[in-house]
Image (cartoon, rainbow, N blue to C red):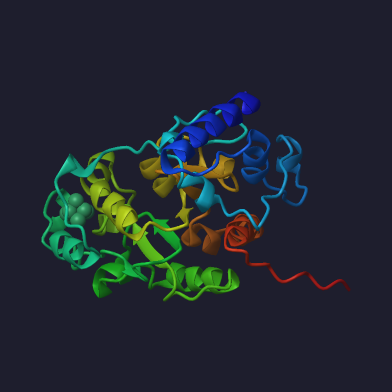
Length: 284
Ligand code: SF4
């Protein structure tokens, strides 16, 4: 199954390469690129082994060359790929600049969340960011201040970003829904479907080299029903040709300290995309 996938992907890339006057990429190289290595755990021992992605071959340069990568996710695939997303935000024509998009979203009343919000939380960060983080939706602090991830979970996210050798100003942070669901409940599918078009436009305009999805809600509404967060975290997906890494939401990590180790494994895989090397552990 995996061999067949890489063969099809290589053919797609070759076609695209011919169209753009660039050489294709061998299936073996693709396979090597899309796989990774992680420390041995009980969970990982039951999964197929994968090799590390070579830092000299960032996923973006490969995936971006192939619009044909829009392959449906397969829960049985060892290399899960999905470009599908639930909802389309109504397919309305949206502005082609982040500033104008933010103005549009600030006026939005397309779903019931507009009735209880204090502020629309559009997202913030570097409009040319290589790395984008996507969470679920604003909480109380975010709603009050109109900024994403500024509460306790946001402080932890800042630490995660710093551990990845980025600054908050270098990355871009957004959410599935731009208005706070009352009581911090999970956004409903209707609310997410109303709002997801804005996020898709943000991704289209920023065009990051990699996306980190924070938590199950972000995974479900951007990638579709690919599986629970504990199953899909640490595995590469793709959205519109952009490598996507699901991991735990910082709010969950505040409750489940033990999950931080797995989240760090996921984040280190993302660091490799940018050629960043995690600090080696000192041995006693
Ligand atoms: S959550 Fe999104 S769709 Fe709903 S009102 Fe806010 S901006 Fe509009």
